[in-house]
Image 1 (spheres, rainbow, N blue to C red):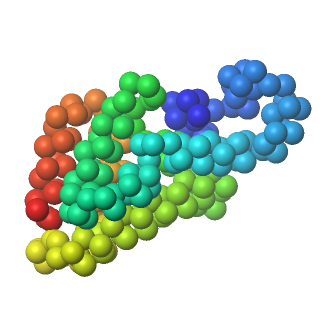
Image 2: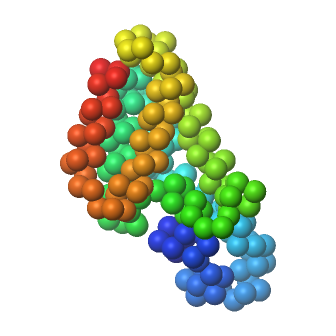
Length: 179
């Protein structure tokens, strides 16, 4: 996971993966079948961890939706600055630069995950609207796109070493839409 996160899908070679995993070519291909399938498993592992967008939202039913949206923004910032892994978001960064597009397996894998993340955010914004928040002239779908775009943009902001306090201030500014 670390190699794909640091170097991206295209920048990570099978020999680097074999070395990092301590596997022979035969073992690696037997276990995963291809680099694309390994990448798919990496993405599955990445989104199943506690800091993922979907897990944050899944735990959000204990609080009002507006508060859960605010927590989502701030926890996403904190997660992307966590020193236990590379900065930024693997899903946002790993297969979005290079010759691939949505027609390639790696491009499809991350595009599909981004769509699942968006759908989870959209469900939370619909719940916020059902709870009477926000009182602004936006739709739940436009708010979901705005929040999802903000979270994806965090990957480049953290990579460019924007201070976390600046990003938390931006999250607070965004949260005024539903506070």
